[in-house]
Length: 399
Image (tube, rainbow, N blue to C red; front, side, top):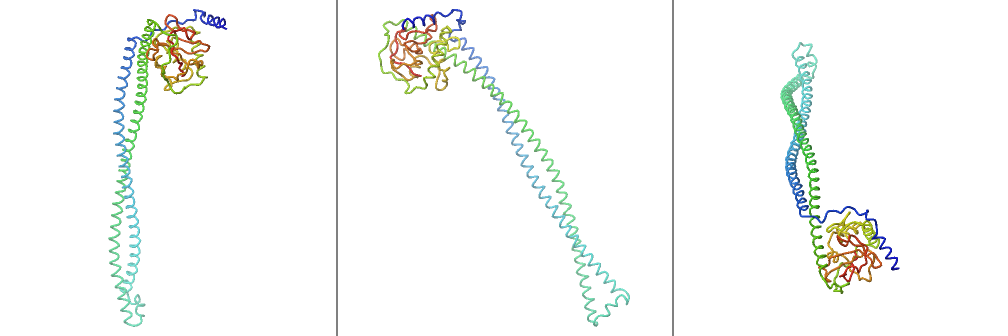
């Protein structure tokens, strides 16, 4: 069994050197970070300028909206006034028609009276019917009645003439008011359309400016992410570099430190299927002989915690359940299991003093006492024995 393991390890480490990719840049430099800051500042300046334009456009839109609302109110008022003027004109027209009918009736009555008067003022043959009355008193009564009717209808005729003239005048006033209101309503409608069109055009302009602003903010956030990522990568790389250098100069490190009762998460966030995917990813990077670069998390180069981060990211973990941390933080970010309970995909931690704060290295357990790791700049990515590095912590971390 040991012989088979040795042969397998030799086969892995004996891969063709021609498959090694070109070395990537080292951990982010201060110059790279400053360049990223400059890009971020330029994006922010552009976003701020666009935000100012957008604010002005929105203010203009609010002004035009107020004008459009005012024009709409005037239009509605003009419509209401037009309805009133139309009703007045219709009422005056109806009154004039009724008055005209009454006057026509009066004309007929007066015509009959005139005919009777003519009869009374004519020759004896014309008034013969009157002489056939039942005596003088009957004749007097008829003449008196005709006189009374003539007087009453004369008054009625005058009243109807006055009413007719008033109705005609009222209808003309109402018609004039209606005509003026029709013109006014049309003008207000035109003003409303102009206001509405201006508001619509401004809304389109605001939408265009908002789209530009959204894109600039996306670019700004992207630039900010690049800058913060570079800063974080540099800080993590410097910390692990310092820890590794200290570990290399510290003597008396144990193979496995005693258990001091450190605690991690209460639960695991992965399935064994996900852990197997992480192991497969780490194995593929080692077999590809990808180089070690402090602060790198792939895809072409890795440091120890960068390999762990990339492996589980490939297994489907993402923010907020998974993030780029350093070795020490991963030890508190995972569920602790004893070394006897290790399964492929668990993480192993190495410290030069047996404390979490001095953890300087992290690996992925492969099974059978072996691990996948990004070891160092000199040794690269390896498949190695879990005890090949001194100072192993007495627990594994299950993601």
